[in-house]
Length: 96
Image (cartoon, rainbow, N blue to C red; front, side):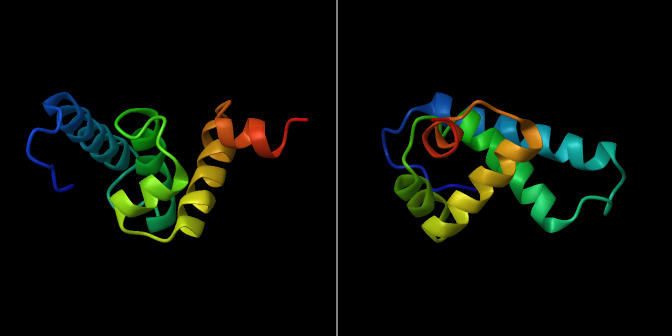
């Protein structure tokens, strides 16, 4: 779970908890153990970026998740492919 700073919005924490609950439901829906680690990470990342981390830069997300910025970019790319979102990443990198 994320470390929440004193005074940080409780709504953000509730959104993250809701995202986790949704991710667990999705995981169990397909059968325990049927989703590989990468697919699970992409699914959770997609929901985090769409809710509690919406609008944050790749650098800010990488610091919050404690992962390299290159992994954030890869997860964003795979989430766009799997969930077909019209994200800023896709607009900035593929649409001319």
